Image (tube, rainbow, N blue to C red; front, top):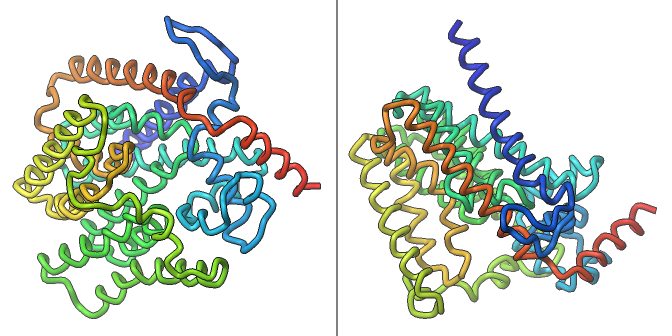
Length: 377
């Protein structure tokens, strides 16, 4: 009976993810230009496919860091630039490309979102760290709105968050080998995944489980990046190609507060930093040291980023912050459901507005499409 109830929960969570994605993409699937006072500056599914950085993941899926490819010229970027696009998500796109390259990209994103939501549900349920694990998992699908946006376009966040959650879940289950494997894959999805290395090490040390076997498994995390960087050396002649692309965004902490022109952003940035910090301490006090350590290692690194999209880089801390603040959510189920509905409406509206505002130039996108068509012939 319990297994049937749990299976129903999985199916409902997956249905919520899939149906909300269909709703979020409906105006573009139908080519709608105006809806509920929203004017879609770009419409059709090409607006979704062109949303940055989606096309770059597709290029990486087809080149897989080859030293030369006509796709590099079509995208207008040099070959070693693609060292900044780590391989796990592009490989999944390639595996699904028989649906079409860009169609496979969206399918991969939605599948990883389903997986992330399910692992989040299992994490809060199996360890009894939420009063209403199912409703909290459904809320996580829609909050924050930026997370909802990135699981409906080409983005590696869903894959990365799924792997981070999996690593923490297995760590709490004392399955260090699976935790290390998930963390290694996370490091090969987004570079910040390597921060799971000190998280796992310190968690094992606190539990007095840092023996030679567990240490060997944990070393797999940095080893995976060393292997990838060795591939970069062979393909691009530069072991540090990733850092040469992104180093310009690293500065002293809080520099973005001095350089960003939008005063509203500065205020929001300050609120986010404090909120994630509070979540880390709340988790520690609840005994959830693995999750607390994730934020305590992750947050300081994001403070070094001078990038207008820094809230995107903070998204992997969201599921753990939700757990940290779980006690403030209503115990009353109808009230919680109303909160979820409000979050869903806001997230869908945000996605409708944002997708057309950040497209790759049409001529560049068309060049990639034409080159892909030529490569298939």
